[in-house]
Amino acid sequence: MSRQFEAITKAGGLAAVSILLAAVFTAIPLARAEDGYLPTAAVSKIVSAAPDGMARAAVVILTEALPQGQPDPGEEKTFGVLYVFSPRVVFVHREEPTSFSFWNLQSDETHDFMLTNGSGQVLMKMMLPELKKTTVTLTFHQEGLYTFYCTMHQPEMSGQIYVLPPAH
Image (cartoon, rainbow, N blue to C red; front, side, top):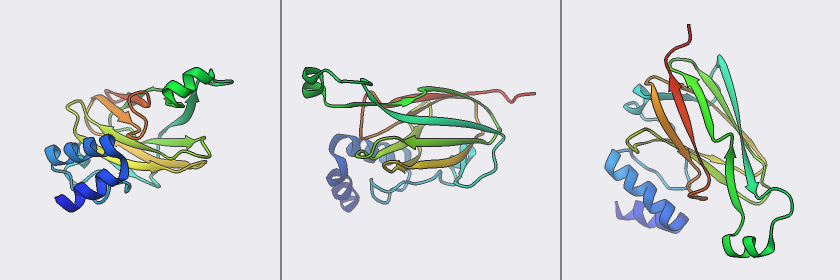
């Protein structure tokens, strides 16, 4: 575990340590913090992911810098540039494959997408490179509230996925 801890702490400080702790407490094997990973076999009972999967619904989530327009110099000096996912709330149906397209609109910032369930268990993580569209088809097998984060830009850059009963 010490090699993983060293690699993770070099990759991003507190956010990386949070990922490590989540992995330890949820028994999810990690490679390196900068690597993404799809759901394990056990996690696939909660949500499954297919990078090129067929979907019946689609969601586009943008990465955006705040404030938009001309930022206040004092605010930017104090807080830096803040980033958000837009939209921050998404509704999907259980057992309905849904294409999630993440558009990273920044030319100088990498983001990531880390998905957790209601108890904070990390289900998956994927990188969102600069000026790229990253798409994955997610199928949720359990209803409930799921939270997603960019681990590099907390606490602002987060959102929620509400999984509703199947549509009839």
